[in-house]
Amino acid sequence: MEEIKKLSVVIPVYNEEENVPILYKQLVEVLRELPYDYEVIFVNDGSTDRTGEILEEIARKDKKVKVIEFSRNFGQTPAIVAGIDHSAGDVIITMDGDLQNDPKDIPRLIEKIKEGYDVVSGWRKNRKDAAVSRKLPSKVANWLIGKLTGVRIHDYGCTLKAYRSDVIKRVRLYGELHRFIPALVSTVTSPNRIVEIPVEHHPRRFGRSKYGISRTFKVISDLFFIWFLQKFMQKPIHFFGLLGIVLFSIGFFPFLYLVLLKLTGHSIGQRPLLIISVLFMIAGTQMFTTGILSEILMRIYYESQNKKPYVVRRALNVEEK
Ligand code: UDP
Ligand code: MG
Image (cartoon, rainbow, N blue to C red):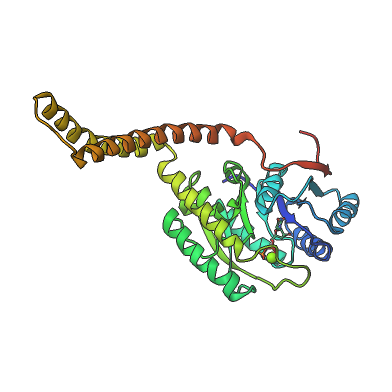
């Protein structure tokens, strides 16, 4: 097991002016006590309040604080990705910037990493959010994600997590995918190396949550997409192509039969079978072409993966790579 030298704490922030100074103070108190070098990476996701100025002030005094500032609001997942991209630690910790996660849990997460886990996921056993609009949809989502991906954990949505950096850096994230990280990670490491531990959760004191029930639908569409990728990502042509061939054959053989009847001098009249068989052949051909199209799409999907899902306006305390 590789030794841990440095920790990177990644925090996406979008309009968290009251929370940032308090969080910074709490974090430093915890990190100073640990026997590792550390850096704190705040990703300012297009905040329109004073978050940017406050971060600048902190970064000016504390060189261990990196600030990545986006050109506009890109969303929590791109912000997390940017933080990971700019991190130098062997272990990466992600957490929310609104004081709902507690920095005091960090040492326990690191302990698990030291035991050999690649991912340690926080589990908000006593989640302090609205029951019907937030906790209930999450329960359903967690169950579904577990069912579909085979990685069963209680709380996918908890941002407080720790990762071995070489493992998390292999996972491509975009859209709202940060919620699925444990499942995605299982494609690059063994599910036995993913563990869950209970963590604190506090109600939001300042500012407002950026999410509501509408996000649930985005999550569900992402979920479907992941499932689809896992199932057919490798070879969509196999799925659609086979379906196409089956449909085409259902149409082709009756059609052949009718053609033979006609050729041998029989009248085939106005048989509906003719129309149906032609329809099946058309549907089959279309399925087959859909297969080819999805094959092309999948390739584009793979090849476009070097694109960053965010645009950085400026960065503080970050050396040019
Ligand atoms: N966040 C972000 N970009 C966004 C929305 C949220 O960087 O577009 C940050 C936000 O500042 C906070 C974290 O992501 O640090 C979690 O957001 P929030 O507290 O609104 O989510 P909830 O806790 O309600 O799930
Ligand atoms: Mg929150």
